[in-house]
Image 1 (tube, rainbow, N blue to C red):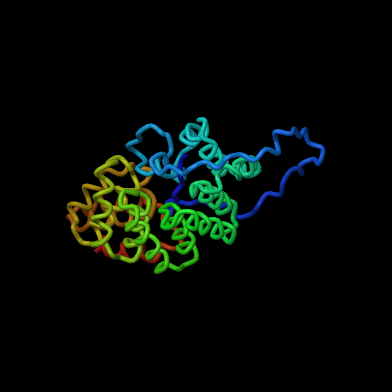
Image 2 (cartoon, rainbow, N blue to C red):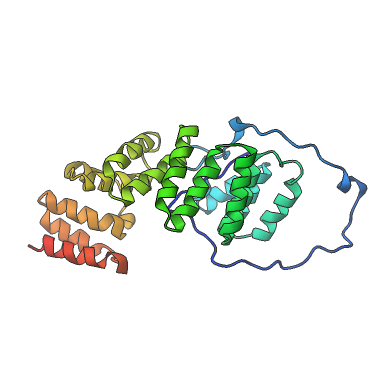
Length: 294
């Protein structure tokens, strides 16, 4: 049995819901065994993870499918665990097939918080936050302080601009599940978003010890060092980020500033010119261009 926790700033939600392609026929091939009540299974926290191989590039892979690529999703959904298959289908936007699995598991998984968490996440990916919140709270009703549900409620708060509530939910998750990576990951980026680099940095450092090749952790570390004006350390981290990722503004702009602060003016100009600036970053880019060009 595997749980899903979403990465706070990486979640991809569907903007619209697909209508069912067909209704279940009232004359389905029913058998007497279909009406036999199935025994509810017992939740086992020790098995609450995805059965994926170690991956040095994705620190959250054993906890969430949110950062998984198509190959990783295929691996997650290929095993015998139906909850994992359900979640892989949700990320592939095959909601009809996913909810078909949830219907089949309903009787046996009533007392499993993982089940309710997965159902909620499928609704969230489908674009229905109200249903998602309802089922996340159902997971907490089954198991108080269930870390994945707390984390995912924080995702909803963050998505709706309620960052203080998101922080409270994440800190509550950490206090009840100190070894859960995803709440720590999300809290680090939330702290960084508000310029609280001194609080974000220790979280990023701890996480990067386990998965040094995770690119987004490098981004978090580099930007934390930059905000703290620890330019040499920031530059070292920026250097570990792949070229294609450096072109995005959250890396390229701060990397250009770090280069400038270290006396690499020509390199700073080159990095800045290669950065794909968007509307939200344009004013910062223009100001930075003026500083580097001085």
